[in-house]
Image (tube, rainbow, N blue to C red):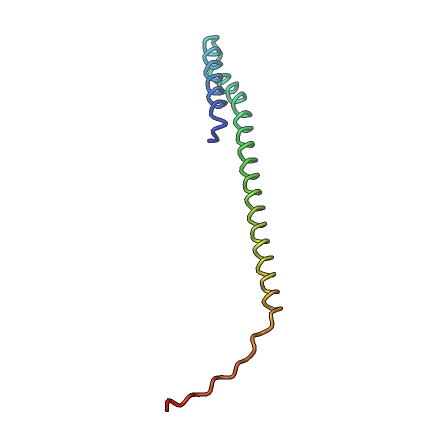
Length: 103
């Protein structure tokens, strides 16, 4: 769980427990309590999940963008080095040295 959501989740559970206790003391039947708590908790949990998914997508997009930029830059460097190597003139051919007599 995202640490940012710990306290909202604790508060949500606390409020749900208080509402459940008040409704039980008031004599509300069990099915109504379940429906009320579900209607109270579900949207909040859905919003927390949506925020978490959005953060993960944002992070994924940032990493993909950074990686693509790095790969593109590396390809540019390799291409520039290839052009430099192609522009260099080949080394002059040297004739092999004649064998020397050990005499």
